[in-house]
Length: 543
Image (tube, rainbow, N blue to C red; front, side, top):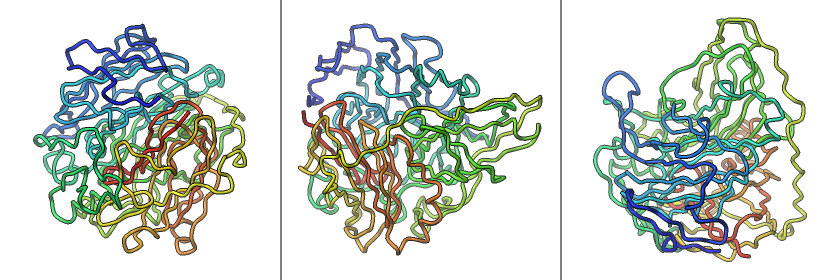
């Protein structure tokens, strides 16, 4: 069922709100198992000594549900629900511009997915009402207005949405304080402690309102009709060439935030922990490893637990990807320190220092992400199950296009990104982008620069809304072998994914099954400045 924004009754923040009754669910007047209000507002936090830092954040209230549903101890709340629960979430927009929330990785109907055509203006409210059908896993949520996603996430609007179920609970994995979310973000701060994004500090005055939902920016022509679509959704950002290039290539910072804090580390007990790592950075990829060379034990990715634990010397984590690690801190001596680092790698986004004015930490540089201080006391023994869950092997031959996979070329024109040469069209989807409910397809993301200006090529983190997929094949052109060699051992493709890193010169094939809902959904690069400047398209699911 296709649902237009006009079919939803959306009122002011203080008004009673009703949801039109689409075919997928009941009205919001019926009781949900969990009811939360998320109020997106400007705020200030004490990030470091000196002036408070201006941020945008979700202030949250739990209206229905047990106390463990909502954790407000971080910059953005952590929401914990169970599979099968019905969830109502009221988004109240207290920002000076339009916004909407995307539930990243969740299988929800099109009106609940956060498509930019549903964005609400200042003072308006949007009601989400859906049943959690996903398997247990680490999902997340963030804004998705067209042309403004990068800025709004950078300002602080990104939180975890954690799903549990009976199967996971039976495994006895670390829980409570030992189930530790780690939201990783890089930021650039000015001398006044403000986040610097493209043309200035976040929150330093009102910003121009982007185009309202409709058929619009970069409207289906070659790369959006050249420069006609403008940078960042119709507004050419100021700040000179460096700022314009950053708007195209991606914003990099020089400080690491963990859970919205500059805190450099934490003390942990000598026992097993589950670390839920989310890369919520706008552009930066991480090559994660323990400083002493101990292998990382991976138990989950974007779509939940792996079939069995696996070990990697390092793990690549691109923007929007998640990885769950199991670590037994009892292996290290009391009082010692274990450091999580990002190792150096080749092929990242740098462009000669133009990102963020030339002072940002280069993409692919080595640096410390977080430190864990091992507490005192005796080590508590723990065992990780050898099997975690059943994940069927992918069967590409069941794809309706097995003989002819669909190719999506990641392209760049004159300062605009696109897919197969076309930028974002708010309501459009081509024949290639039209699929049938209940079928499987093979898609190939091709990142070899053949369709780009001067053959320019850089990494992309490709995300498909509304489902999880399986990575079934990777190949890279010989020209990029050396760059690829520096990252390939850290790719975790064994589980269910909703986001996949596509390196320069690489072709990645994924197997998708369109099983849940009809409607219009997005696929795009999750390096958010790429998305905002055109590397995003719709796909349409027909009954």
